Amino acid sequence: MKNLLRQLHLGVLLFACCMTVAANPLQQQLTDGHLQIDAALSPSDNLVPGQKVTMTLKIATDRWFSGGTRISIPEVPGLVILQTDEFASNASETRGSQSWVIQRWALDVYAQRAGEFTIPPIKLRLKVNAGDAGNLEGELYSPATNFAARVPEALAQAPHWVASPEFSVSQYFDRDLETLQVGDAVEREVRFEASDVMAMMLPDFSAEAPSGLAVYPSPPTLQNNNNRGVSRATRSQRISYVIEQEGQYRLPSQDFFWWNTDKAELQLLSIPETVFSVGSAVPGSAVSRVKVDPRLLLSCVAALLILAAALWFGWKYLSTLPGTKVASWLTTRRQQLRRMREPALPQALNPGSSAAE
Image 1 (cartoon, rainbow, N blue to C red):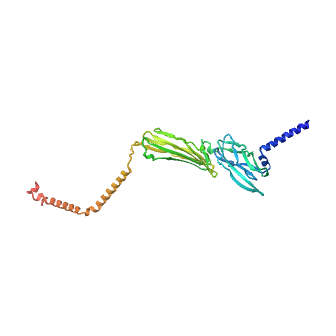
Image 2: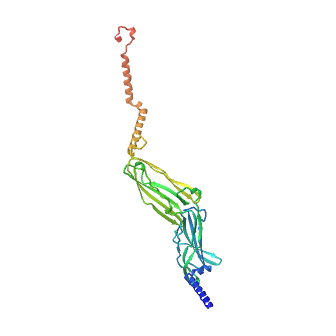
């Protein structure tokens, strides 16, 4: 009776093993070394929160892939794991005398906080050719991986930063700020661009403005692009300002922290302060701003040049003109007549002269 029970138990185990192999025929391929699955992280150390880590899944077979591969990305607290490439990178290599076909899948991993992280085995659904066994399809798992993210001393006081090899901040206005009047509207665009991050990880922009300006911010526009393994993200936001009264306005500067992953150092990027005045009165100044028509200003300059040329011409050539000689002759005659009216002798020598009266 005991032998019967033992044989029955052994039969159940064999049946279970057969069912397991039948349910997942690829497991035997993996065990026999005809199929290999590896996982690696790059970079794997000196990481800060928010820095991109590339997880590469390498699947190799000594036959060929007879169908597509599907990846089930796990959810890990504190991590963002994304599959940004729709297709794998395919290659082949020779191992001994055997040719192997290789698929490489890249996943982007971002730590949202400092700490130790474990990415559990990732489920892969594969379909490969197994020679005489034909095409086999089933699920396998990649090895688990581990990494750590630390906050360096330079970032200890930073509330938010962008961890990237490239980061830029810029702003644009859609019109000249020197010609604004009450009731005008001006649009401002603030733009963030970075590589190796997602647009949702770029900083927010605080659209504050002083009293006298009505502020209407639009929702930010997020864009992610991936070209040949290089990812770029853009976050742009438009803000409309409507001027409600005259005065001088200051849009404050804003600073943004950038952890340069190439140099492993903290850098500071800023949007500078913007100052502009609206209307004729400028607070703190007794000088009124007057708008001058450029055409009128050009006419005034031309008139001054003509006047200067006329004065120079008169000073150089007026003495040579005939009219000038006539005026000189008349002046000489007038002086001669004045001298003829004077007495011929002094009064003391001619006391009876009428010149003494």
